[in-house]
Amino acid sequence: MSGTLFVVATPIGNLEDMTYRAVRILQQVDLIAAEDTRHSRKLLDHYVIRTPLISYHEHNEQQRSVQLIEKLRAGESLALISDAGTPCISDPGYRLVSRCRQAGLPVVAVPGPSALIAALSISGLPTDAFRFVGFLPAKSHGRRQLLEQFKDEQQTLAFYEGPHRLLACLQDIVDVCGADRQLSVARELTKRHEELFSGTAAEAIEYYAAGRVRGELVLLLGPAPQRQPQGTVKEELARLHAETDLSWKQIVKRVAKEFGLPGSEVYKVSLELREAD
Ligand code: SAM
Image (cartoon, rainbow, N blue to C red; front, side, top):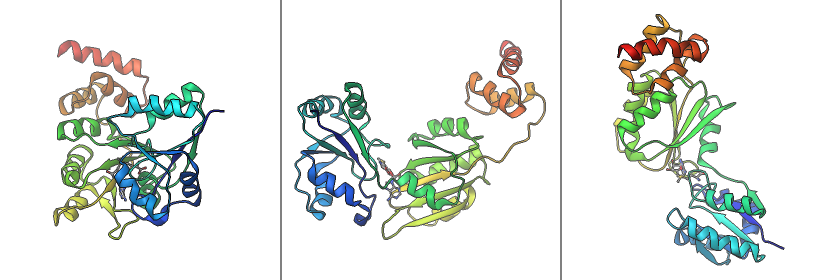
């Protein structure tokens, strides 16, 4: 009989957010694979969990996955945890889970906290559909390119971001998506200094420029206001080509959506412009 891999969510700040089931599973498994064993030791000590730990992080994922698969095949049960929240969500784990699935080994979720879901749940932004983009690129150029791609998104967009880059990100959002774009910043969730900011991008800059931004945060961008197409298809294509870093493919897709036209039709118009370019 092969063992089971349990993917166990752990608190994102407040130790009381551990589920009963998570504690029991972590006590019962043969081995816990943790992103940072020293960090996780504190949580495990708190719940008197004495199960041995092994490191599993982005730098040893490949090789460690092979070892862990062998253990599962040999019948050992394993739990995977990350430093905080749900493993595999912008955290290591995906390779191990994927290998288990390929090998036909059972993988079981032990759900619990995730900063993404906690932030969405209190933001007041639409959550019937949302798009999680993970961490924003560290450099402004990359960030702006990504924001260009998503600026007309009709779903709430969710990003993980570090506090030191928040202001620069907000500035890029103002420049690319507009000063009036609604957003939320969920900071230090479940911790003593928990805070949720909601307002426009310009208001957010004003708010956060006043002092040093600290702690962990999730940035949520509200859906883009419905935009009425302006000018002709050709003019809009030319405008986007001149004003953005988008590829022709992205531009065609966006204009087709804006004007409610088939992509092939807009593509033909774009060819005229590209030839003239
Ligand atoms: N797997 C985790 C989860 O499910 O939430 C996320 C891991 S990711 C490496 C860490 C990022 O999550 C942080 O940079 C921050 O953006 C966000 N985060 C984690 N804890 C948070 C908290 N207490 N409040 C707000 N954001 C948090």
